[in-house]
Image 1: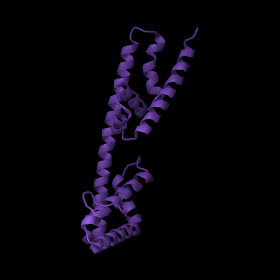
Image 2: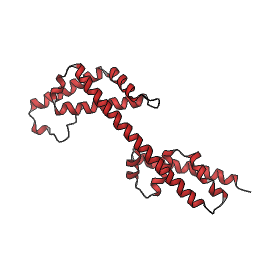
Image 3: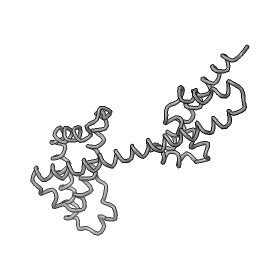
Image 4: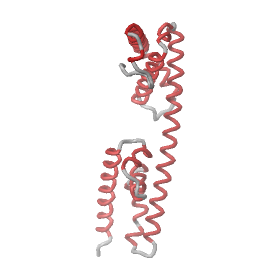
Length: 200
């Protein structure tokens, strides 16, 4: 937790100020970690859905620690808050982080569904007037690939680069490329299997 707050510089602070802020950040981090079980229980209740995993709760807790640290780095007096007030502040940060995560997840689901619909439409158009085997490709997509797989293929077909695809799907460029490669492999294997069924 030695990062400096955005827009600040230790060069503008006296050595005493730097020591005070560092001590405040360390003290607040220690107090929040001492109350980790309480905060995690609160976060789990706020997540409140069956799909939420322990990893989700830990991610929110890590975000809470990081944002609390940034606040203390900007105002060392926050280290003087009593425990109840400090936990209330951390809980508010956690609630906001959960809300942000929920909105991002909903946005990602909408993007993936839209991209998947686009790919299915392309395949359906390409299959019209072609062989029975080609027309079977559209349901094959749904059976073989997840919404995320369909999305990464559709976005790539729209000539987006890996950075843009990664930003859309909430992953890294390397992660997007790996998912695309695996999805195309799975699709090719399924298509080969379909071709074998249609051989005389």
